[in-house]
Image 1: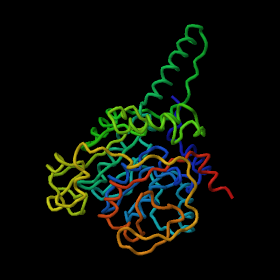
Image 2: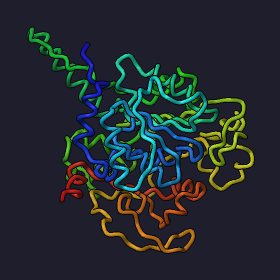
Image 3: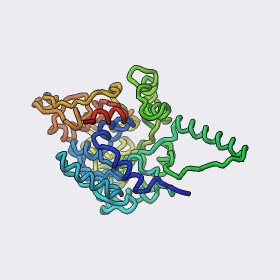
Image 4: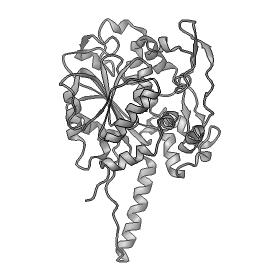
Length: 378
């Protein structure tokens, strides 16, 4: 069977026709930022495997997180290195294969994979085994794939009916090349667990995006802050029905009797801490105020309603930090860092502060590609 899901040229061409600034402006298009901010480790090295244009590498670095970007497209990596020189970043971007990574055993504190694992026609076992090898004890992996959502099921049913009719009429059925699988949260959980990771959370999310899929690309006028689709999605994303959202997510941990604590980074968290929390937390950090955010069964969500296709905060503004009370300038690239509370760049890099913000103050901004591209036209 012909497959294009892992062809370098497909992805090189895609990223060559995209802009990093546009990708950043669309950071809540899939509704995943609350999970990424909440569960990305603050200590050690965090790898995004299959980083593409690296929007989350750049963003997480603003939070003081040591991120590495790995991608198999040489042209994309070269572009990232040039772009970051012009924009004041100095992050490690590496050309490589996520099935044979250039990292030592037990060396990474975090592993991020957003929309990558579904493209292996043989399945993601080899890539996930490599992830397990490279993560240190207590290392956290955040993996997302497209979900078998209500809209995907609708499309699959429609296609099966169409092909059945063609078969009856003895017409040729043209099968497109393989691009990706759709994994339900439960299926993705089983795939991660096959590589010996302990999955502490597996859920569906991004119900709002299922409506954008239904209406088609660049039709954001059908999904706005005042319509019924947004109201439905806002309720569904806080209920058990979110399992039918557009994305499947797993949070998993490389377990050991003694693991690195998520909140302090020390190797002092016991295995039984995962009976109570989604991530390893040591006994000392259980007394920290941020520990309550990681208790099992906590709902992960934005803390306010979506702002749809807003204008950019393009003019640098002076603000007063809510934490240190010092004045600071807003960020030309990341605006107000995506939080509903003022925070200066220095305070943002303090783990206790950004963990608190990431659990209590994430502000959703939804922009479609057409709008985001228009914001950067010269």
